[in-house]
Length: 222
Image 1 (cartoon, rainbow, N blue to C red):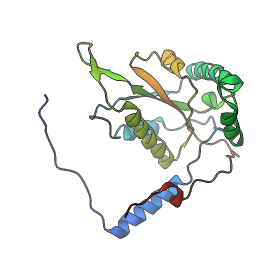
Image 2: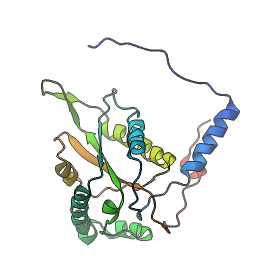
Image 3: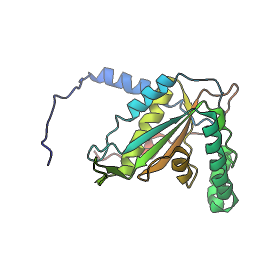
Image 4: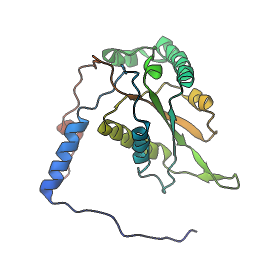
């Protein structure tokens, strides 16, 4: 068993007024985050995207195994290949895999099997879940709560990219095995989320949606 080591916690205790101000400012910013399907092809600063990925990788994880890999794709030919494979799966989804209720729920969003944003967006970030790790001798290393851990990292990533001034979309073509094949990822890495990243296209519009108010998502036990 590895020895337990500790370091002093780096934590700033703020006064309640400062806490409220910071929370309100972040809430106001994240309230403007929307999923974008109409992207500009204008290049974005990739060092900013990399820093947002670095931020996402600070997320907590089961037993601190950090069971994630982030793939950053900017190559046009590879993006075209990913689009073709994604649209093949989506045609099957919209053509019969999805039931009527699912299709009805998607209708207000205006989605279909065509995914041009996979080529238009200047970069794609694919988040892979490491179902297990690998030790230097090639044996498997157990990972824990990988779905939950990678889900938290995905939330960090979306918030970071929005905060930095970039638009995103959470795209989950199902099944997503083609992503691992296209990128040559090892067997233990399972595609979890595909995120186009860029600037919104000029004149971009999004569905007129409302988020649930606090009293519908919060249950207090005082």
